[in-house]
Amino acid sequence: MVLAAGLGTRLRPLSDLLAKPLVPVGDRPALAHVLDRLVAGQVGRIVVNAHHRADDVQAFVRTCGYAVAVSEENELLGTAGGVARAAPLLGLGDVLVWNADVIADVDVRALLALHARGKAAATLVVQSAAQGRGPVGVDAQGRVVRLRDQRFGQEVTGGEFLGISVVGAVLRASLPERGCLVGDAFLPALRAGATLRAFEHGAGWYDIGTVDRYLAANLAWLDAHRLEHWAGEGAQVAHGVRLDRSILGRSAVALGSGVISRCVVWPGARATAPMADAVITPNHVVPIGP
Image (cartoon, rainbow, N blue to C red; front, side, top):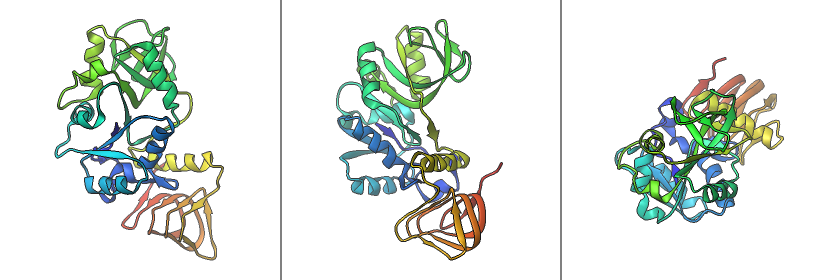
């Protein structure tokens, strides 16, 4: 289940033009990166929920090349409510839940295997941090013992929750029609004595929920592909313009004279050099602060 229904408020004005899961990261929309990871992990059926600019999400799913169902929400139901509503499309059993604005190289098969072995109510993907740091605390047996400052055992390491989890079938059955997975499912389960496990993720990950993090995710995509810059099909770069750690989308144009550095130029947009640290859409130039 890919959670893609949010309004993308923190990502405005980018999310005014595209649903947040469809903003381009490197050569593809963010949602495409998530779907690639799920398909590589050999999950069964895939469901994406949609609310804000739902027609955009529907159109993408029809052409993405994968078998994906869409659970459209007329009103926002929250992360728990979205999973509950999609139950007929998801079928029975455990469900892997992935926030669409999170790009992470998670080993999906290893995550599912750990969840199956651990017999936990849920398994959360966590990047480890020092004890007491981050919103998650984990004990020596890999169990979640702190969540949102509520404690349920002796913590040995802290961590960041990536917004990726496996929700077990029993916990799924108790999900509310509206509500949050953390506040209305995971925390009540911990209070009732259920076991939640942590799956440690040691690699990088990116939450593209804000414009600065969105730019960072694009720069990380260049680094991962060992590219100094990237230009999509039909992109044009004027004589005298140099791209430095920048992405030029399909049919985008780089004009002027000088360097375009650390910029993401959306498909069909125009950027004028010199320019640095910005996201350029067909409608906006959005600078990134220091």
